[in-house]
Length: 273
Image (cartoon, rainbow, N blue to C red; front, top):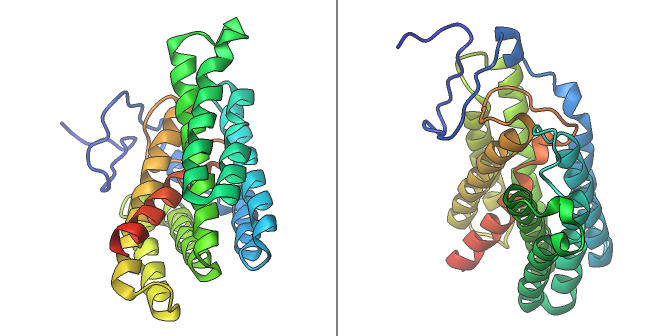
């Protein structure tokens, strides 16, 4: 088949699967970094909060997750409200509070409680009893709970580890925004995420004693995987299709992958010691 001017091509991942809708115009491939200024502010707030007492980091992380959930629900492409926003809003505080109080065991309990709220909410409100609404709400709640809980655990491990994670995420997201704005048809944002994450992982491994270089690079790849998967999830919810090179609606759409990247980064550290 011939590739047209309006077709979208993505190097990573090469196969998306599912329903796909290509951008209508070439202009849609242009990304305005100014539209993502709120995401940069949130990342900066998380970076600064990693230096302050753990309690404040927990509060700011929960606030960032709640803002993201609201933004995701507000741009739900279905138009029918497939995400039960109020049920998902319980996930970040439950996961964060339980992790802060009881560590890994608390994270597991908070994660389970977040899923339970999402699943059992329709018992009391019939409009959310469709399979689509329950499945979407539970999935989003799981991601939010896992992301917040993992970030709290990273901060409990050490300030340097939390800063390393946020630095890798931040540089990867900025690289994605830059490649989306100026990469044209040569480099897509997914490549930018991978390259940015690897560069940041290399710097983090060299500059911190808490993570060795090899572990930092593997963890950076895990972060890139989470960010790319988050972009896919975000595009499905926000546009109703899987796209890789267009600017997704929503002020916090660049953070769609943050909450998947955190548990993958934590798992990489645990697996590699």
